Amino acid sequence: MGKLLVTKNNLSQFMEQGDSEFYVEQKMILSPSAKDMLRNKNITIVYGQKKQKQKQEQEQENDESSQIVTLIAKVLVEDFKIYDQNKINCITKRVLERIDL
Image 1 (cartoon, helix red, strand yellow):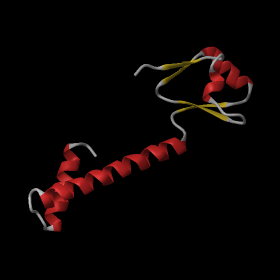
Image 2 (cartoon, one colour; image 1 turned 120 degrees about the vertical axis):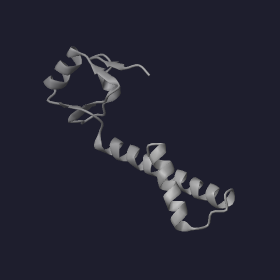
Image 3 (cartoon, rainbow, N blue to C red; image 1 turned 180 degrees about the horizontal axis):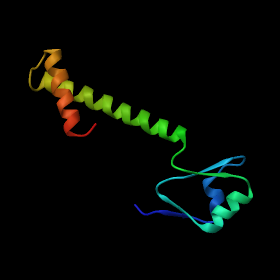
Image 4 (cartoon, rainbow, N blue to C red; image 1 turned 135 degrees about the horizontal axis):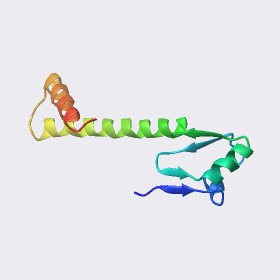
C-alpha cells in the first residue's frame, strides 16, 4: 500500500476538532506546509500511532491468537485424537512459534 501525503489542504481530514496532538503514522508523509500549520496552531506532532489505536490493534491481535489456539486444539482433538492437555499445549506452542505469533 502506498503512503498518504498529508498537506495543509487535507490536514483537517486526519484531525478532530480540539486535538492537541497530530499523529503521523508510518503510512503518512507530512508536508512542510502541514507541519507549519500544525506548529502555528500549537499542535504537537507525534510520530507513531495513537495509544488507543495501538491498544485496539493489540487486542485484535490477541483475539486472533486466541482463535488460532482454539482451532489448533480442536484439530488436535478431533482429527488427531490427541486428548492430553500437555501435548496439546506443547504442539500449540510450537505451531505459534512457527507462524510467528
